[in-house]
Image (cartoon, rainbow, N blue to C red; front, side):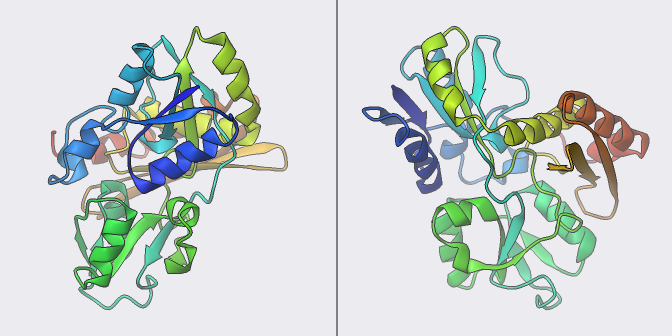
Length: 295
């Protein structure tokens, strides 16, 4: 089995986690568009699947058998020749503040993030902060923080935990303050739709709860016509055999924000996601998304 992955430390951790389940497999590093474009802020880069496209092309060309993605990077529309074969158990879904807690940040503090979703929600709660763009892998961002370029960073807690950096977390941001990215904390394991042998092997990694929650989140995102580069947050969880989903859409400057909370049967996560999107649109989400500069 040949596993395709990006070359960052976190991506390789994820690929090696898959590799350990299949002795004799090997990892091939594939550079994506997102890895090449390092200067511009992510919201300004108009490339669908910027962290996944080249890896999917390697699958279709039979250069690899399995693609390992951070599920939040994988577009909601997948090529019909490919399949999301497994969604393993999720890590922590929340975002983390590194360097300060939200309450301890002084007015005018510089907070680094490359995400419009994070920036808009942060400004909604703390409009006094200076939210500044930061790019690079986790180690690079932490180095910039430690060098004094920022007072704090917002990063996915899952990535910090997977890299053994949980001690850098100053605060896990509550969902009602920072609604996570769609699919955050989850891996998406992709293969060719007609590769029955590999699909059967990957089925052992499937986690039904992770599949249900991420399916609901991705259905909401798809119904809103969004991507990982717009200010949309959504997170789902299971409680008492019911599926719960919170969704958020914010204006880029954080001045306006709409939020919904819905619940439904675990048997229809797609329907729940679409219901959440309809509720958000009824509250004016479309007008907020139209404020995102054209890319």
